[in-house]
Image (tube, rainbow over all chains, first blue to last red):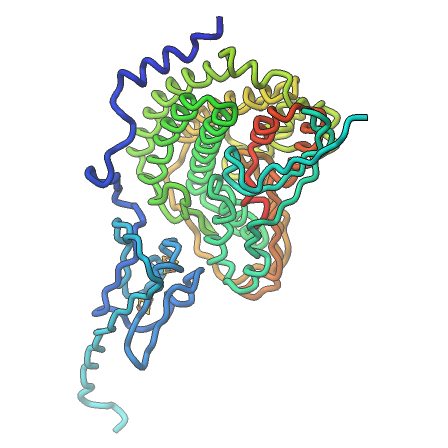
Length: 127
Length: 359
Ligand code: SF4
Ligand code: SF4
C-alpha cells in the first residue's frame, strides 16, 4: 500500500526539466546582493585603516608608507564588514566569485588618493 | 559468552558529512556498547573571542555552524543586547524570526535528504535537496549569502527586505508547501522508509529527559520543550503549536521534523503578515559589561550562548553549547542494543552537526 508513494514524485521528476544547470556553460545564479568578492578603489581610500580593524579574519593590511592596501583572498570570509564600515565608500562587494588558485597569494593595490588641497585661508582675524 | 569485537565507525564514513568517531562494541551483529570520541575539528572559538571586538565576533559566532548559521549569529547578538540593555526595533525582530525559520526549513530539508541517503534512498535524497535549493535562493536574494547569511548585527539587522519581496516570498511558500507535502508523504507513508525507521533507535521519554535530549530528538520521545515558546525575537507574537510524538524511534524524530516544516512555513507567513514598518537597527555605543546566558531553539534543539564582558571591546568569555553535544548521550543510549546495519540510520536520526559541537 505504501509502496507507490514515491512513484508519483519519481515520475514527476523524470518528466520535468533538470533542477541543475550546466555550469560553467550556463552562468551560475546571481542576485544583486550576492557576496562574491571585495573590490577596492584606491583613488578614494583615505588610509584610515578602519577596514583593517573591522575585519574579523585579519585579511586586510594597510601600509601607509608604501601607500598600498592589500587583501588576502584566502583569509577573507566575505562578510562585508569592511564594506559597511569604510567611511569613504571605496570598498564594494562584487557579485563575482574569485576563481580557484593553485598558490597562496595576496592582492596588492596602490593607494592613489590625493588629499584635496585645503582652501587657503585669506585673512586670519588675529594677525 | 559471545566474543566481543570492536568496529570503528567514522570519523570518515559515507553517511557522515562531518567527523565523529564511534567505537562500536559488537556481539555478533548486535551493538552492546558505544564509545564516542569527538574533537577532530576543534577551532578554538573560545580563545578567539578575546582577540576580536564584540561587534566583529558576530561573524565568527555565525560560522560556528554551516546550516543554522543565522541562529548562532542571532543568539550571540541577543545575548550582547541583553547585557547592554539594547531594545531592538520590532521590524528587526520580525526579520530575525523570518530568517530563523528559513534556516529551520533549510536545515530540516537538508536533514531529510541525508536521512533518506542513510538508508539508501537516493531519489528521495535528491528530491529533498531540490526543494532546499529554493530556500537557499531566498537566502541569497535577501541576504547575499546562501549558507552564511551575515545579516544579524548587534542592535538589529544589516539588511531590510522590501515589503514587495516579503509578499513574493509568502506566495512562493505556498508552492513550496505543496512540494513539501509530496515529499513528507513519502517519508511518512512509504513502506521502505517505515521499514527502516520504525522501532529503530528507541529512546524512552524518561531516558530522553534524563539524558538531556533536546529539539526534535527530545520531542520525538515526547519531551515537550521548544524554546521558541519562550518568545524571544518575535516568536511571542506569533501563533504556533509545538510538535511532539510519543514513540521515540527514528520514525518519530522524522515525523516531528516533517511536521515542523509546515509550522515553520506558517510562522514565516504569519510574520510576513504582521511585520511592522520602521527602522531595522539602533545605534550601539559602549561595550558589554556583565554576563548573559542566552538560549534559542535551533533546528536541532536548544542552543546556549554564554557571554561575559568586562566593559572593554573584547569579551572575556563566550561559551557555546550546541544541541548535538547534548544529544550525544541520548545517541549512545539509542545505539545500545541495535543492529550494526541500523547504526547509520540511528546516528543520522539525531541530526548530528559535529562541527557545531566542536566550536
Ligand atoms: S569581507 Fe570581511 S573578511 Fe573579507 S576583507 Fe572585508 S571584513 Fe575582512
Ligand atoms: S579602504 Fe576604506 S576603511 Fe580601509 S583604509 Fe581605505 S578608506 Fe579606510
